[in-house]
Amino acid sequence: MSQSGSQAAAFFGDVRQSGVVWLVRGDDGSPTHLAADGTRSLPFWSTAARAQRAAKVWGCGLRVESMPLDTWCDGVLPDVARDGLVIGVNWSGPRLVGWSFTVKEVLNRLAAAN
Image (cartoon, rainbow, N blue to C red; front, top):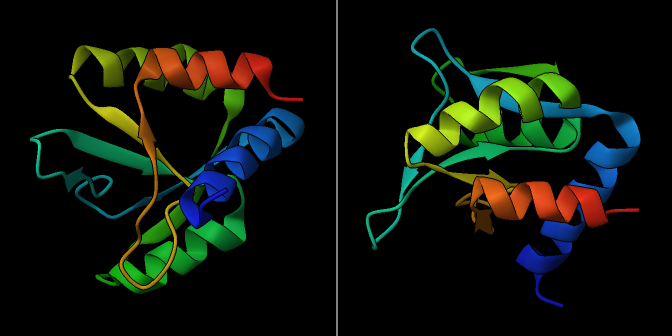
């Protein structure tokens, strides 16, 4: 399994177990990433430590916040889908790379996570 694949698997298992999703945000909201194909990703992490590493890489005074998994699933994910974004999970490394999923894929993977 690739590094991104193992990070994605960890995301779904971790958030299913903890019931918490972590995000990085500043005063103007959360950073997104525009892929070469034009898809915009909104990233989330499964632990505070992972999100803190991302905030440090991005800099710019970003802070780490947590959100209950139920709030994320019921409130954030429908908005993300409506806005045509995808969800980045546990991006890592010096360039913060990783996998992104559609909202439907996220919900399916959460349901299948142990």
